[in-house]
View 1 (cartoon, one colour):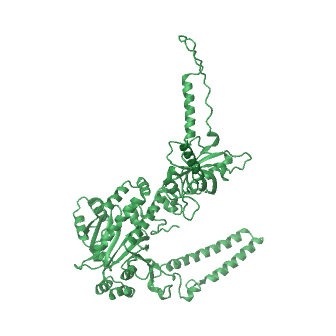
View 2 (cartoon, rainbow, N blue to C red; view 1 turned 90 degrees about the vertical axis):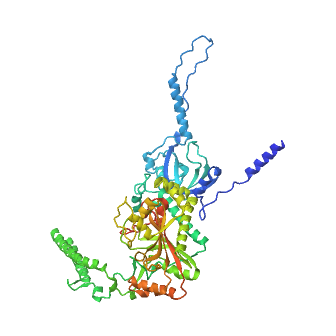
View 3 (cartoon, helix red, strand yellow; view 1 turned 45 degrees about the vertical axis):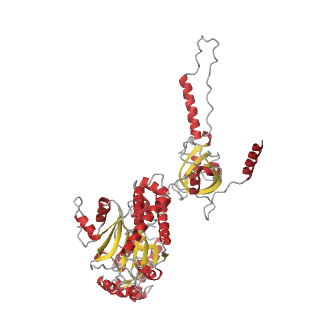
Length: 636
């Protein structure tokens, strides 16, 4: 008895205690779906607010939820005489079995949440229910995603809760904010552990299905590039974005944990190498007073004169229209003026085209915004050296730009690089840093983005997980450029477009052969010829090679580059001249670092988009960034 009282008191106390609230999304009055999906069945009974975009839907008409009563079957009374034959039943055994099976089918449909689905709604439902008769009521089962997870949450909504037609509520891309109670799915066969039964709709952001570009059918990645403002709503791009975010966080975590200081370096610079984007405000400006007056001496007309003539002709046409003059006169005048206007445009077009071919030497950059020539930076390591000379170990993460006119699966005009500079270090130190950093990123993804990696592997490359695990645990082989050339020259099963002679820059086909066919894994190639690496890399004792390296991975190519930089003033000064950098004064500040307190230093640069290619197996680099910029393409 006492035990029963204690149990009753305990139960009564439990009933009075409010359940623990589910953690809300920070800065939002809703619960992220990831929180619910990870909590699973333990959250059943909780009342929460969720929000997301519809991935798929189905509707069940309310009147189909109740199964029809079972048919009456005549069962004969038992016979009074054991030896007497039983009377023949009025319903055959086959009919009885069929009727029972129909009942079980309908019952199974109800329990599974299936019921009868209606893909085509009544006309008044499609029109918004403006008829006098009320539209049919549906129970809508929608899979929604809020981007916090690969998985979706099923939300059960009664159509009477919404002031929009069921078809709009179910449309792909519709945004729904719903308040409801979490429950276990009614169907035992459901793939969902938990679902939400909505009691209130707080917001419905409808879409126009005729204009909404996404569809339930999986669209090819190259098609989605033209829909860069909508493609994050696809599961694939969402997963890639979360992997990208994880790599960014992992990069900061690695360097902060290893004593590096984060530094922001400028995007606009006065120095650099390679094909660079120029930054200027002088395009289209000229000091020619005659040009400012828009006078063409050769053709003998001015824009102002033409404008006045057009105005006069317009007045004349209006007068002809109001008069009794025939229509042919109006047409003749209009045709004559149209021909003159076309001739004028044809004469102006060559001048307009020429304006886009202004040669830099003809521009007075002292009158430009910055008072000198400026570019979008190719590398941040120049400016990082300044801070490494004071703080020891520094890193940065930012956009880098190259103006190479190349449009293939491995090139972008705008990329993001993680770059470091380490004082008191040499080439081996930089290679060790690159090795550990790269492995850390692989391990971080396996531990923190397992769900996304698993999903991407199913869609893109089934070897992703195995490749990441092998990279994170195995050592990365290192060998020199000279050894690489020797291996390539010994290849008997492969013919290269570019002959592998010593002194050439290794091409994608060379690197692919080494990583995919010879070593079947990541490698580090170091000690390149001085002609194929930047002028600031340290000259080796052989005077032919420099202290530079590349970390090369299968299927992608170079992911990390690095070098020990030249700290000796005389050699650096000579290298600048050797490279034919005409405006040597632009590098005086860089030489100052060698003049005053010089120190051995090295650094690395990770190409984030190429790292994403390795981590996801995606075939094209344009699918690794939200809004890709490449030669001839800058959508959005």
